[in-house]
Image (cartoon, protein in one colour):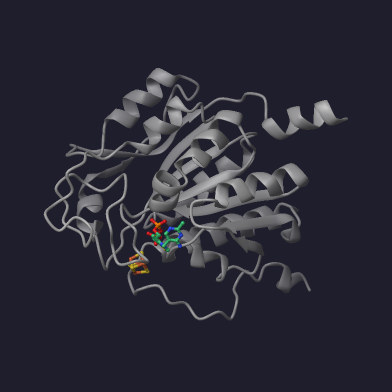
Length: 268
Ligand SMILES: Cc1ncc(C[n+]2csc(CCOP(=O)(O)OP(=O)(O)O)c2C)c(N)n1
Ligand code: SF4
């Protein structure tokens, strides 16, 4: 029984491409959940909300309560779950296509209302499952099946979007840095309020960013976590165009009233 408590693996066949960054996210999340369970949190009260796409197969590979939402709508589903039972830990896994294109309004409004859910964004910078169309974070000039002459548009910066949307926890990690990602997931879990974790996740089949990230990424620790200006300085080190270095870490953290708690105050 004690052993079963820690079993997070399912017998579902894994269909990710060998070398995909999603494997690292799955491992880091399992490590984080193992710590949560070891610290006494009941496994059955952890909920995984998947979206649609390669990333969201993670829900099939985790022996946890889970639900797959509609494409771009998983954040709304997660908010409903958290509102129904504030005792649950609710983790959303979604791609950049889902959260920065189709469902961008859900992401913005969940951050704005400070819903106490944790969003883990698998940022591979394209729609991978459907064979690599461009998204809001694809580089300008990138040729994909939907931009055969090169992407005309400039990418948005999701962390700046989150800062402007009043997200109370903003962080970035890398799918190949398991310990770093695990620690950030645990920090997001402890944070009381909405948490956004961007995970840079190479898609080895359609946009292999591994050499680029291995050269540019570095880990940093912010001394002024509650300062929007300090966060912006870190975020601006990489504005999704060429950069000297790309920082990883928690960039912003500041507590403010939680949506669900305020809603229950009205109801009670
Ligand atoms: C509303 C809607 N639009 C489009 C699709 C088709 N579709 C399924 S998966 C997918 C790509 C998913 O890309 P992303 O969210 O970035 O996740 P990834 O596959 O890259 O992990 C698309 C466009 C869909 N299922 N529903
Ligand atoms: S297509 Fe890309 S994101 Fe999808 S499983 Fe393969 S490597 Fe991973």
